[in-house]
Length: 476
Image 1 (cartoon, rainbow, N blue to C red):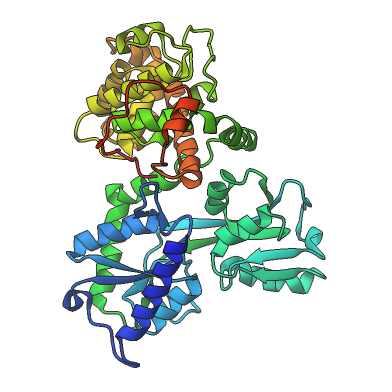
Image 2 (image 1 turned 135 degrees about the vertical axis):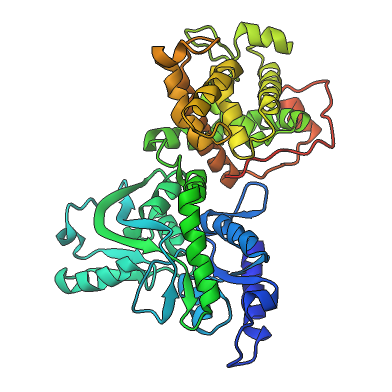
């Protein structure tokens, strides 16, 4: 966070100092880059598990830059208001900072990227409200200049004692964290932002829908060149028809409703109590087989809740819940030994990932490997054949997670040499692992230092860790 804060300050100083007052920013083609004001939040731009920037708008902007033939320079500013100000001052070509269309602003808006639905979020242990009259005497956090901020100003005239508090710097993410800590009673937020934050703070809950909807869009200067404005309009239109917008939406938001409050709370508790004992084993196995240890740990949690003695009615056993046949093939002699199970599960997951066609990119590659861990590579390949017959993309997890449940239906199962499979169960597993992985990526470093003492405490002896293997980290 300190590194990002320093980067934000430097970006602001560079933007402020580069141009003389009143000077016009060069056209992106003359300048040789596309300058975009953005901010760090759950949707626009964030630091991913591998330390690289990513996010819904970030990925769209990279695709736009590739189409325009210029690199994108991200000017990371503290708030949406400062991003809009940079547009008004002509310091950037446009702003992409979780903005919603507001025709009262002196800017030119792009076509909408997604619909934003707002909710009022409270703490599970706090007050519950059924309508706005229940907000009398309460304090609500909101992002300055947002659609809910305008609505709350109107609401203050109708509801006595309603107080509004504005976010300091972090926008809705900061507000929701303050609600979780009990510093605010309520916060108004985009429903998607709430769903993403709810995975880290299961104590958050929707207190009341706000019945407010808006369009997320990019803001250009009023005097922006028609060439750039038309290029953005064409890009957004093509992103819709080509499926690019849908794919990026799926990548960042397609799984956020999978886990309920009880499951998230249990996971967070076990991450504090059970995970520390086995973390060195996950790190060792992940290094040896070129995986992200947090992905491996997420699979293990989904399989056994990090219980090395777990056993299911189907006969799978151990931390990684290996079948007897799979364990024998992997050389695992004792499935109930935590180290053997984790090493075997890591090897199996890496094998499945490597068996996928080269056309399957990350992060889809990881989610398909996780699905195959559950249902088997034969059934995954069969589902791929069904996907192609239905004109679906068998290299896309977005399409495959809709096709996999079909392999349980007799009409489709009859086509498969592997027979009927529990494809729906594989989808549930992969989507749950996606959530657990994202939570761990926020809580845990990518490659923690593992001492010999910690390995010994976890029961690791012999088989030194192989060095120099680059982890294949699936972006969130």
